[in-house]
Length: 360
Ligand SMILES: NC(=O)c1ccc[n+]([C@@H]2O[C@H](COP(=O)([O-])OP(=O)(O)OC[C@H]3O[C@@H](n4cnc5c(N)ncnc54)[C@H](O)[C@@H]3O)[C@@H](O)[C@H]2O)c1
Image (cartoon, rainbow, N blue to C red; front, side, top):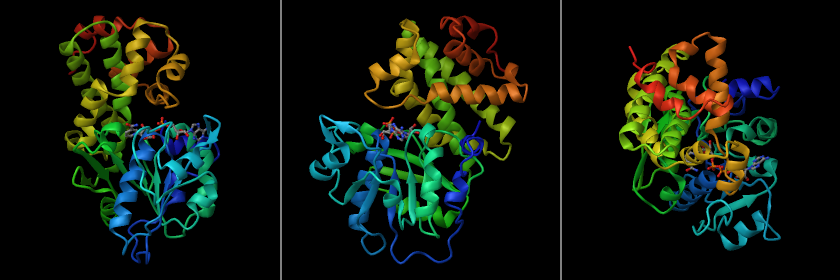
């Protein structure tokens, strides 16, 4: 199920209606940015954007509003901590945020007048926020989604890549991909994000960028099972290769307009490698294979408030496979689903490798 469908099924506005401005002819006098989300990645991109709007003051309002889901941390409101200490102590500890990044707990106030909306929060929280944003945003707002969950069909750009937030936040060099429908909008977004250590490539394939960005979280669960069972890098590389194969096949099956070469971009193979060696999905799946086999407990005990994405994604993806009656063409995705949801033994992922994964 795509994010767009999630929004529609829940009776909420699809993302496309929140930012339906494709190829703006008239640019805003000054672009005003709202980052919707303030987790590990949301805070990291707010930091980058804040540094850039400070530098590019003739084009962008220097102040960047960051919507924060209010929480109490050590007896104090998280927004107050961010606005006084300029640090998101819960989701990006130890990293200074620029003083022009303003934490706002009220969503309507944060999105009010925004001409660029940057969506950076776990996908499950998005649907209920969209009506408020739709009311508050500027009528010519454009949007970019950094959410690893498919919003295919929306008139928005998507930005994905091999970007572990903590490494981006400390300034390690990396790349990312912007998938666009409107090149003009994508170029504006590139200006907003780009830094010498954060390089962006523009690709006219938003669907491919989202599919790879989303499915890599699922393949990373498979990589984590292999780690948890004690296998080495050869075995993990085999799972990753088969995973790439099924990612491409998934795109061909459900979104034939997808461009195959997108898998060679940062949002494709590079993000898959990073996630299968580093990310939180791999980490929790490694522990799941050893036990306890309880995702909620693992998320709560291992991620410090961050959210696991791969498990809810494979539920949606497997439903898409079942609805289209193509489960048999995706043996790895099917097995990851059965290990996650149906008490199938993680060891099956290796046992099956010599038989059912021999791809045609
Ligand atoms: N962290 C990374 O390294 C990274 C890198 C690239 C992309 N991404 C993607 O970016 C997106 C955002 O990830 P993240 O790492 O910033 O999130 P996160 O898991 O670090 O943070 C969780 C966020 O959800 C918020 N939240 C908790 N309960 C909520 C509720 N009921 N309603 C609304 N918000 C609530 C929290 O305040 C917090 O901001 C995800 O799709 C992720 O896959 C993450």
